[in-house]
Image: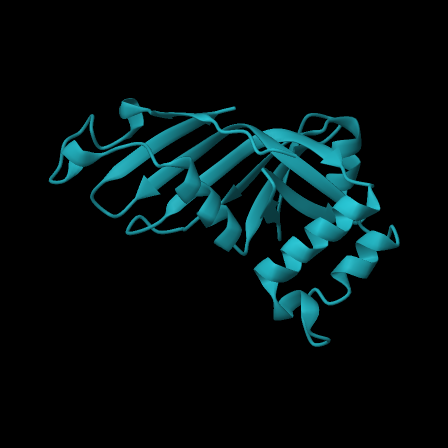
Length: 181
């Protein structure tokens, strides 16, 4: 798969450029390459799915950015798997919970089940590279992750961004970037 390159736009309505402070005159859109780097480094993500009755379901999980998509897994009986079976639209988020630093990222897309063994192995390798001992060590929190996907005990999903947002903040300067794919 060839990763798509998005159109990148700064939304001045929600950036410091609209409410000038020292340094605000240099507010620019966050480059997509920087956003991808942050996705590759992130350890905790949150997923939002829609229940059959329309209520939202939000839960933390681990995810890996690989080849233009975010990947995550879930057990077939878990609420997010049930929700995705009825409505594959979802949102994945990651970032910092402080105003003093960081880039908060929102990825909107459609979850697609990954069943091809070759692709599963590529993605498992991406998880192992991103999370290291948490997956590869016998004492790791997610040890057995790859085997659980390979034997079907966990479902693997890919979410290619339809639209994404980057909310940059450093305490004084804030930016709101929209990525359109």
